[in-house]
Image (cartoon, rainbow, N blue to C red):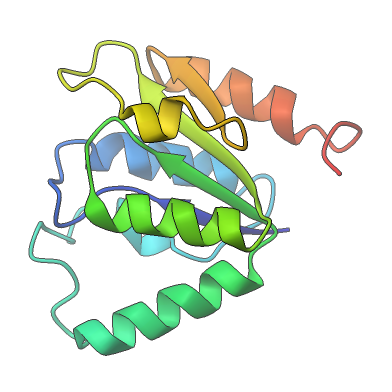
Length: 141
């Protein structure tokens, strides 16, 4: 299974450690195309070795190729919102993770969208349990 993981980059890297942990867990279920989102070396300036056009083209290609789209939506990000919309338009299965103690309320455009599965969690153990339930081979289709 090819998994696209979305998390804030230019919107702020405060959740980088959680992204990293979640990506490590996702590797148990398939190939994470956007593994770099969890990299400690990636700061809020984004990927400096690629042009913005190249990043856009690569990410759209990955979105097209993925079997599953997962977004961490606790930190507002224009890019993540755009990616969610593209994944939805492409008919991808979309799972969104929102940290219950986030200082920012989740957008109604995300929370209210019936095509998105929103999971509120408190910590990485909660997220792991959700992934296990959702990605169990018998349940995932």
